[in-house]
Image (tube, rainbow, N blue to C red):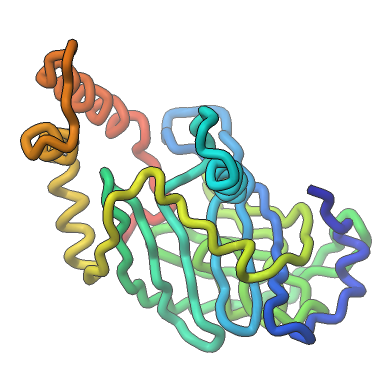
Length: 268
């Protein structure tokens, strides 16, 4: 899929002349999920903006789910972050967070208030567009952002919003996480509402407190969904001992908890 260059986008006049038009901004996320790592992983993310809402998710996962729903007979490599979709209504400070745990897709509200300090520091991007710097402390990290005041969209990647212009770049002061705008194009709302349903048996709406209680229970018993499916007959194993699979799930969960020890939000 072709993207507009950022320089051509900056003369784009933001409007909603068509009710179904969605402006999609592609960001590169670079991150360290292991605090002991000396290298970063990367993933493409997308911010979708229209008059109805802002949403942010893995672009790589979105592409894979799109392919799956057009042809579910093929096998697709597991890429991208299945876990999160963030949605916010314009003018609101609460996000509807969707996370997948096991075979259940949970949705909960997460109020986010960002106390930005806009500095006098400015810089130009590769296309010569002038950006202005802002700083904020958010849930255990200090963040630096550069926004473009000529693009009248008061939002950005992840849960960052509230600056007088589109956030083009944001990174924490430990160099653990960064988001950088790399491209954009227009699409429509019907095209972006593709569900990742192949991983999900049901949807539940819970409170944020309830969700983190559920998350703690998963950490204690990571094979809970698999065991429930075996016991209720949803999964029937002919030539494998379910206890072997359960031990494998539990071992992988223990390894992941050691490795993925550097969350973007240290205080949740």
